[in-house]
Image (cartoon, rainbow, N blue to C red; front, side, top):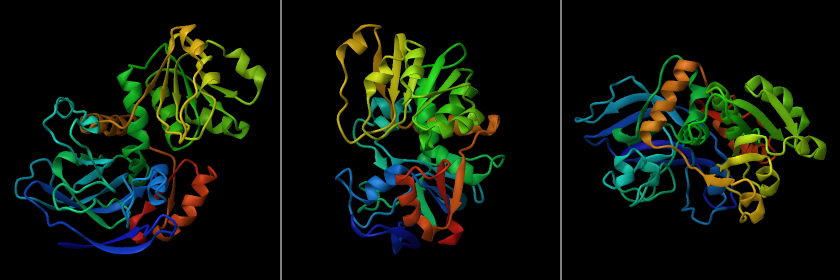
Length: 347
């Protein structure tokens, strides 16, 4: 076994602290790499505090991971020593079901294996994530990273990036489409960047007037202050797509009314309470609501390649490992632009 250093939440009520554990030895199809940067996702907080009710402790969060290869298994063909690589939310799936064969491992019919807090199908126990100095992953779930982009800005692409890239690509969002984005956070700022890059006309919908300047710098052409009834009224039936990134309880019906005929609201946030939808908000203009998770491995690689070609990264604040508990509190106050990334050299 490989001695590994990390940070873990011991229980739902304790802060994260140093935690030593073991990774499995490198198997014939495994890649071992030194973790250089790891993004901090809001789901890390949910898991650390057992807000989804499924956490197994101790939990080592982190699924926005970039690093450099230090060892490869005897049968590894895709990677070599020294390569820049990444791992996102997935480290395993059945590979045999129809979804896996279509490159939709995130929707594996049997069971997707997540980067942390998931049953480890290879070595037993529970998977541990990227708040650590190294990781061992099957090469089929490892991604190639270009050296053209700053690695700290690449890390959040592995979750915040692909979570917004995937639905925009799935619904073929592009030129002549009118797209609104709800919420300018870790997900929202990437949705603005991608939608604008794909050629859509982007409007930022926010309750905070101070976010207008940033939204336009990121690529939004318009900004609407949603707590101003007059501004909201003016955009009735204005959009083909709305990307809703909000994970707190909110009024979906207000946003539905902003969709034009056959418009679609794509939900990538996960509020803790059920939606309350007025039927006529859907019926009147033949509107739809859909959800989308992360992307599969092929699409995530496609996204990383697209970002390298078009110079797209996340806006980040780099922090040391021992700042993580403060970072969590700041995230809960939306006090970050727009993603914390841990410099793992500080572990």
